[in-house]
Image (cartoon, rainbow, N blue to C red; front, side, top):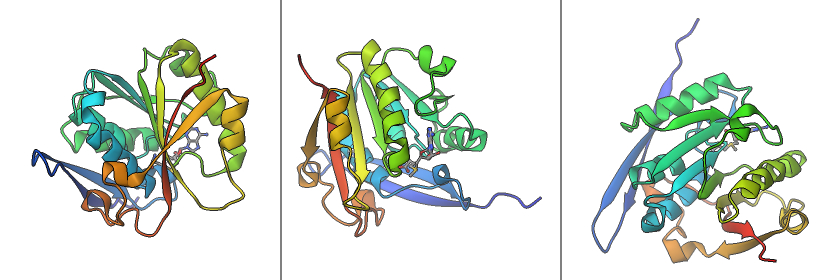
Length: 224
Ligand SMILES: C[S@@+](CC[C@H](N)C(=O)[O-])C[C@H]1O[C@@H](n2cnc3c(N)ncnc32)[C@H](O)[C@@H]1O
């Protein structure tokens, strides 16, 4: 059997005012599974977490379908009270890779669990309290959109003040989550990328998102 070949990608988050910096190194594997490499949405969401790190401090964070977990790792480095990373239950190697990405950044206390969209697994039912849910590039196949909202709604039922921070790549004008937000009783703010220094083609010095169009969305329950 051939050994897995890792390629590492470096991300540098920098605060011009305080001159603070954070370097995260992510190992990537050439594999057809989507969870083994960083997607263009991830540095944008990670930059949002970095830019608003004071808000993350002391919060309980869940990253859904984390893959290489760049946003979750930044949250853990920015003093979140706890970070839980999740991946599809049926991709054990992806779950393992998530653990590996954390270990590469000196993080041993991040828990990695299996959560599959739309599935009421014991991991989802027993989820500890959550303040912020992160998700980078989960809305790419419209057949899954409803299932993702089933999972989100369940978490919001138990954590009504929770917020959902998500990055979305515009791949086709045929796809939209607007009608689902309405159906599932959510409200959504579009956050301008320039408001958190993510409007260039190379966020966190990564050459990502390049020329891809990414939206930063902040979603919460509609107030009744
Ligand atoms: C486009 S990748 C994004 C990965 C990572 N969040 C990023 O932005 O770099 C989509 C992720 O969704 C996960 N995924 C696919 N189907 C899933 C499902 N049914 N339930 C949960 N996660 C799923 C994949 O394993 C993969 O990590």
